[in-house]
Image 1: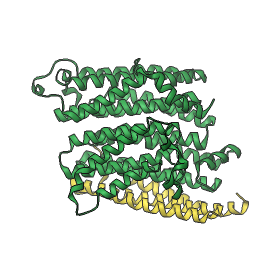
Image 2 (image 1 turned 180 degrees about the vertical axis):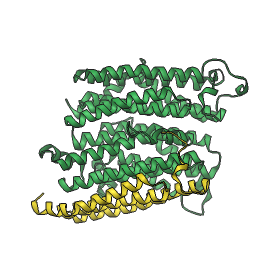
Image 3 (image 1 turned 90 degrees about the vertical axis):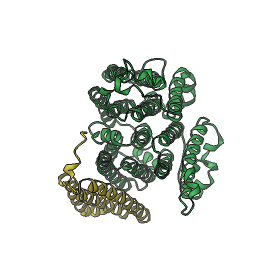
Length: 477
Length: 106
């Protein structure tokens, strides 16, 4: 019954928006919490009969062409968890009932859109679901209505529209050459026929569009603006999962299930990944704004995922998927921490912050966990995923890329430790003496994400057998 | 692709390309927020034409029609949200100049 993951959020949205019933307005928040928790819970059991697409009555009736593999399940878990966390954060940040209702309704739309992206096996439906998620996220960014938010939303909107026209023209060219939009048909045609220039143009356009959507260098211009100008809960969602699903997961899916890896595309992916790693890390060092620094660090971490994907072997792609999972966890955790700091101090300027660790022990500890995981310190989860990617690169003979990936880890450690020292360590300054740990929801969400980050690292053998090796086996070699 | 269908494609190709170039030029050059949106509309029109031509040449007319109708619906939703954002900018500055939106630096 996998189509329920798409239909339930839409159904909940319809019921909650029936006019003349004020009673249902408060329930939107609980609906999001329940749906996302259910989704995260059920994706912990990849062998449950729920995932069997033959029993999917609604999906087969509408001929939705949905399917699940081990890569999709990892993503569904991340989507469920991050949406859950975002709802918790939003409850704290948005005090006005009506605005909270609007926010949670949009969360339902994004949830359905992302689930659709992850499960669909049709290149045009993929575009439709990408647009659903993207349009809802424009509104989420611009919701504050202050001028920064509007500027960030407008930049994202224009670049996103250009990206979708690129992807659509690629779909049209594929339709012209292959005659179908089903991913398996496209994959078969790519393997059997020789690569005509039109096909290469189609692949190039699609990948370029996804680079814009995922915010990779040199198309990263919109990303720091959109992340830093959005409200705190919206930036948790955007940085944690939306751009990763819309840009990076789609890139992985389209390369694995449709286009296949040839040497030109591999080289382009690895080059773009490496440039993103280095540029993002170097730009993050110089930032004074908490959220902008996290945004640049996001570009850098996404570079690792694309580098792993570009290597093209089963192990490397499994490592990239694991890093995608880790990134969703530790980056949302860092954005939750920046949210609680922003809630207490009303500023995002790191130069004005010092010594918050004395008054906010949970935020200080969880952000230390997240930064260490992001820089690849054992035994946290980020270490294992980076290790797998570097090992796979080394095994495939890409020594230079592997070396750059390891060295950039050091820069990551540098900017994160500098952030940690400036914000949480040291002495409290006079005017901010009366800050305190923020209330329940934010502490709870930070603890959940930190527990997942530590757990996935400590119980790595379990993760390896249940989630990573199936992905590597699925791709082969 | 047969040579005959290649001829059809080559006949439509210049129109698609011209629409693309007009749209991109409009988005890049203009300093007016509404005109940038119009440029994007022209870009999407180019893609719509390309989709229809692709469906016509390969004989999948019904598939291409359903794709184009879906595309038109999504485009309308996109434009409503985009104009909403532009209106927000207009309420702040009382002008549609894109030069106002240069506070954040990439």
